Structures are given as C-alpha cells and as structure tokens.
Image 1 (cartoon, rainbow, N blue to C red):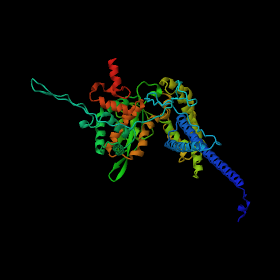
Image 2 (image 1 turned 135 degrees about the vertical axis):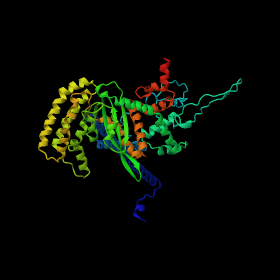
Image 3 (image 1 turned 60 degrees about the horizontal axis):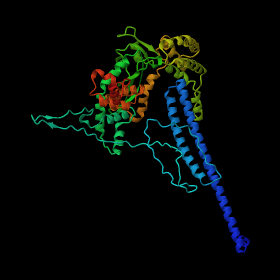
Length: 557
C-alpha cells in the first residue's frame, strides 16, 4: 500500500469531509482558471479595440492633412487605400474579440464585462421607411403576478435591414378595337423603348450603364450576378443595351460639350487607358476638360467632357479645343504648345500652370514620412534636401492664402493675391534662382527649379486673374474614376469602346459634380427623352434636371 493510501482516514465521515474539501478546492481552482481566462480574453478585446480606434484616428488625420495641404500624388492615395483596408481588418478583429470577451464574462463574476469604445455612429437617414415590430408585452407582473399593467413608455432600437433586389416583368398591353361601321381596326401606338423590342426598362438600362461606367463593373460580372438572382441575361444582350443607351444619350452629350467649351477657364489633363489590340495590349489616352467656376464664385454649373485617343499626340488636344478660347490650366505637355501661339484662331488660349505639379518633385525630396516608412521597412532612405523643404514650405504658404479666398468673386481674389501672394511669389523666384546657380545642371533640384522658372509667366498668371486656380486638381479628380476602374476592367475592348466609355464618363462625372445621383438621373432621362421636345433637351441636363414626378407637379402648379 502506498503512502497516499496510508494517509487516508479510516472513518467514513472523515472520508466524506476530505472528499468534500477536495471538491471545493477543485471548484475554486476551476473558477480561478475561468476568471483568468475571461480576464485574458477581455484584455485581448481591449487591445483589439484600441488598435482599431488608433487606425481609425490615423486614417482621419491623413484624410484631413490631405484635404488641408492638397497632397494629390498617387502614392498618398494608395496610402489611404491601405489604411482603409487595415482599418477594415482591425475593426473586424475587434468585433470578434469583443464578442468573445462578452461570452467569457458570462461564465464568471470575477471579471467585469468589457465595453468597447466605438466611434459614434450617425443616425439612419430620415427618408428611409420605418417598420415597427412591437415585441409581445407581458400580461402579468413579473414581481407580484398582478394583471393590472399600465403602459409607461417604450424603448426603440433601430436596425438597418435590406430587401433583396426585386425583378419584375412589365407587360405593355395595347388593346385592338374594330369599328362596327367601317370595320377599321384601331390600336394605340407602341410605347418608346430605348432597347429595340423593349426588353429592358429604363431603370434596368440605367443600372447596367452606371455599374459599367460609374462603378467599374464589367458586363460579364454583371450578368453573372443577374443569373444568380434568377434572371439570366446573355452578355451580348447586355452589350446591345449599352450601345443603344449610349446612342440615345448622344444629344445630351453634345449639349454638355457645348457648355464645357463655353467656359472662361478650363482644367485639362489626361491619363492612360489600356486597350486590347491584336496579340497585345496598347496604351491609349483618355483626355478630360473640366469647367468648374465655383472657386471664383461663378454661377454656371460645373461639367466635364472626356475624349478618347489611341495615342498622346498633340493633334488630339488641338482638335478637342479647336473652337475654344480662354484660359487653360494644365501641365507642361508639349502637345498644348500650339494652342498658346499668339496668332491662333479663333482666339487666344492663355496658359495657366499648376503649382501642385511643380510642388511634387520638391515634396519627394522632402518627404520625412516616406523616409520613416522606408527606414522601418529596411529600405534605403531618401536624402532629405533642406532646399526642397524650404521650397515646399513657401509653396504651402501660397495655398494657405488660397484657402481663405476660395469661392470669392474673381476681383476680390485678385486683390488679395496682389496684396499677400505676390510678395511670396517674388521671394520664391529669387530664392530658386540663387539656389539653382549653386547646383549642377543635372541635379534633380535644379531640374525642378528650371521647370518652374522657364514657365514663370504661366505660374504667376493667377496673380493678375482671379479666375485662375493655383492647381489643376479639378481635372485630376475627374480622372480618378478611370484610375480606379483600370483595376476592375483592365482594358478597353476596342477604340470604339474607348470612345463610348469617354462619352458615358462625361455624363456620369457631370452628374456627380452637380450633386445628382447618376443612376436615378439616367433612369429618368431614358424614360422621358423620346417624348421630350428637342428644343427643350437642356431641361434634362443634370444641373436643370428634375425627376419626372417633380416636373409634372411643377407644371400642374
């Protein structure tokens, strides 16, 4: 017999007491382990919540800094995308840990439940319909069992829900009638359909167009999703709908083009568009010209016009702007040079340079944050130039003046610039000329300074004309959708497809610039344009548009 057996008492009562004590100690140890585990889960949940909150605040800081200091480089845009993706993952992890901590806290009373600190959620929009679901009320008091209950009030918890998309077939019935006197058969005319034989309604067509050109969803992905919803539509049928819709909207496109080309000042820019070619993928271009008079208090609505070309020859912008005269804000692309010739017909185009383009090479050589990221990643650091930092500081001072006068009338903007910006610009010119003389001709800083000094009249045009902006960001914002779309549709199928995409981009971007829902606008316009008088087509433009119901109410009033 071992020592443990010899230590046990022989008395039955004593054995029961010892067994009871052992069970109590085991339960106490188990409770302690559960409490420790619950505390560990709570700490993990708190850590995840803190990481998510930090990521959320960092993202907000980056967005505010970008909006304040005007950083528009693609690198900073990619950084924001990465931070948003990181925030998405951290928020998901924090939610998982939060639920685990809540479940663990219910198994023990020694650890308080963890309450996650979340950013305040905005209330649901008022225009959404509300459905009241009243929970069954008690019939008797849970305390005394009495049945004399009186309603005191209510607590409402709102949950956002979605109803799956509904499809329906609309049957347009045209009854036939025969005359009992002459046997003539009468029938009302067929309604107008954008698609031949009317297989797609205006709302469906608007959805296909907007998802393809506004949400960058190729048709093959759309028809796959429609098939999963029980509505099989062939790819060729959807493509026919796109072609028909673009053809119907062509008159509105011409009106938008005329409005853009009548501007006193235009923003111009271009970006690459891959296009499918025989056995390879060529790089085409998509050009945009943006009219936006809001910075100098103009009353005319904003609009954007897009064009497609197979290459980047200067003949393309010269053809786009053949009838234009005014101010063109763009980069130093040599294809624009012929537009600035003094004897040009039908009139002069004055060049206005973009200070954001000029600032970028200096900012690259003065980017402390990028150096910190490279150092953390073990990469070679960039040499920080104090001269570049000083140029960036001086240019940022000009943008600080601009932010205070944005939206003011042109004459007020010119007066403020003459008083505040002109001395800063002259000091910057003197500083760059002195520093450039000390640098070798091939130095990156010298090249960046030469780029500005050779075009100094274009860079200083904003001092004498309040209509000119300091940057060309309006055109870059218009092109942002194409840059995003390239990741989804990869390339255009043909040159004609590129021209069709440019036309739809013009309409969709113009609608967005006027704070109009592009899909709702397209659906309403496609339903009305056939019966709308041709001399009143301007009523359907985004800045004049009213929905069909609103237009009928206005005419009735």
